[in-house]
Length: 305
Length: 105
Image (cartoon, rainbow over all chains, first blue to last red; front, side, top):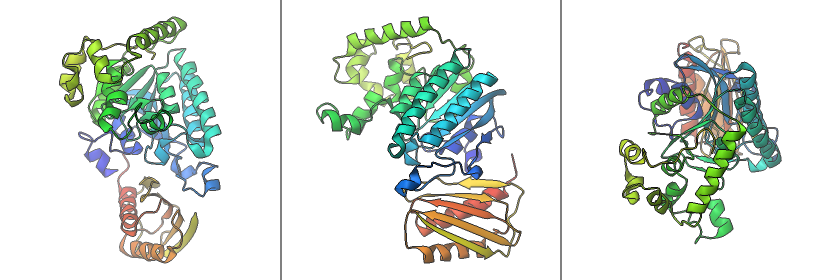
């Protein structure tokens, strides 16, 4: 699209479509789509509910080059059914990850999802399980699976579980990561537990800055396609590790974290506890200053989270 | 879903050589338009699946206007619609023919 190429130096990741993000992420002109929209590989379930379908079922997959290196890529379209996983949507990502293992090529997943599509929940849940297995099976022999999170829908539900299996997560402030979404928590636990209309509170507890500070994400970037691209190039320079020792160490880190912060009622208190100066200022800080203050205080996940 | 189909004589053939183009997403008040260069050069076919029922006459007016004004000959156009307004539809169709005219990267 003309707009994507012209805006390559400044394209909001949050505002962009899945196709625009891919176009801006990989080397110019290198993207080749698999199972493109012309094949009309659409959901077999939505028509039962008389719901509109999309030709790519809300996910664009294919191959491209990143700084010259061949990579496999997948991008979810958060505006189509909240980027949710259905049968075809999920199968496209599973297939891509299995190809990655066979080809020994790294994968970039551009998450933008509310989780599983309710209209095809069983197929969607199965897809989440298959994808997580496929991520681990690709990572074991050394393939890196990088997650990029900064879209409108965030990365929720099954999408957040998949993100948890990635080797590196790149996140912007707008990129929320959580298993349950704000409305889900409020509905189940009450407004005293979680006020979903308090947007500042939502972003403090699920947003990119908090996830980065607690080691739930590894690289924090501005809401710019070029920033995501540079971070992805950076992420592919580190060697991916995935073994039992790594997972056990991470399990211990998470148990310690729960002991230390399990009673906290707001993220600000957690930031203070890990030693961030004037932690109440964190949400308003521009990226450079945020990274400076986070630098020697934040926790690290080391290839697992 | 309501399905509509139009086969129109197109005075001008679509420019460029791209085989296909896609614009827009299926969301509330939005639509996706897939354009494929698979029709005879003086024909434009448009197939629509829309969530909003009973607007066949409006669709016909919009697509006839589109084919009269733009270079749409040779295109098979497929639309998934989430209830977009006619001006949004006209805009996406215009974006679509622009995109398929673009030089391949």
